[in-house]
Length: 225
Image 1: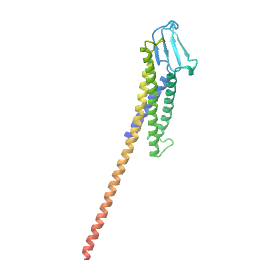
Image 2 (image 1 turned 120 degrees about the vertical axis):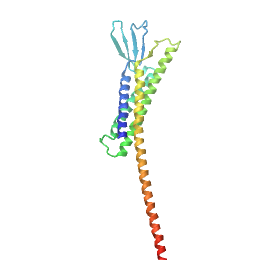
Image 3 (image 1 turned 180 degrees about the vertical axis):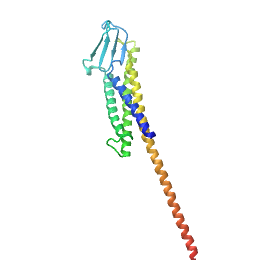
Image 4 (image 1 turned 60 degrees about the vertical axis):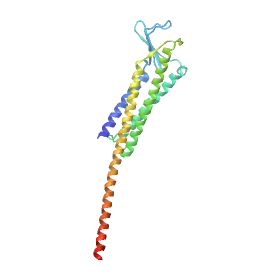
């Protein structure tokens, strides 16, 4: 019962992280700038992985996609790939975890097979969280480096809200995967302990029977003599 409850809580944590990372990937607030430039007459501008947005003086929001995705900086393209990989891993892990939960009877009935599916889902959640954590941390490092570089002549940005959401989602991702894996390992260890205890009890009973039989044999030999 405890293992089943832990699996459900772990899956909910991982799914919350999956949802947050999905929103983070589509967000346009990865980096923001409050400074107006000569070329862009806007109150502030923001940029994400796929498009940038600006708020004009009259209060309207204008967003446009990047004209050439492949012409973006190398770290942006790498962050896109890592975030997409994280989402795909999370989707696969969610399906495997649902099949591996003790409280579900979808497709699998063998306890050992369900445990393998749950452990695989947990590892995929952890791997997906690592992918998103690397992408977000790399992006934040590049924004910070450009901001403090006195030789950088372009627009200087600050960290956007999407990065903080992404960090939180990555942590939930990995926590869910760790808890899911540990719940299955705890169950396996418990079963091993029960089997070991049963084996020890059976072995002790068998040795007792042998000892009793040998004693009876010795007594019978003495009476015969």
